[in-house]
Amino acid sequence: MYEGRVAWPTVDDFDAKLQYDGMLRYRREADGTHVGIIPAICKACGGPLHKVGVRARQRDGVMIVDCGRCVDAGLPGHALQFTAHEPAPDRVELDSTPYLSILPTMRP
Ligand SMILES: [Zn+2]
Image 1 (cartoon, rainbow, N blue to C red):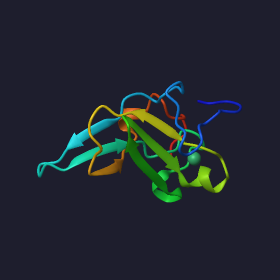
Image 2 (cartoon, helix red, strand yellow):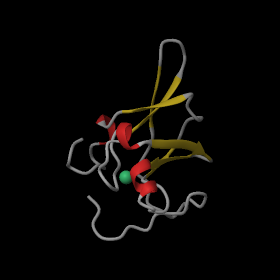
Image 3 (cartoon, rainbow, N blue to C red):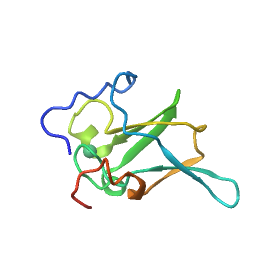
Image 4 (cartoon, rainbow, N blue to C red):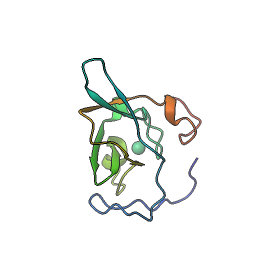
């Protein structure tokens, strides 16, 4: 749980010095589709990402997840930032299960 101000990087300025949220999880479907798994709630505001909107993109070994509610609130930067150890997935899906240790205790 985060308290007080958290200094997020600006949108196109993610920083290797920033504390990452750990390794991104992936799974592969039977047809070979490569799926990245991102949490279903925002670590910063606790918003359910399927409702508040989410944008995820992977670049240079980092998966960046932006929460729609945080963006609408004018908060700079990224709600979540993961180390990506596989190529960019074909799509992402929302599943908090692998990330319970980093997420707020509140549930959507
Ligand atoms: Zn948020």
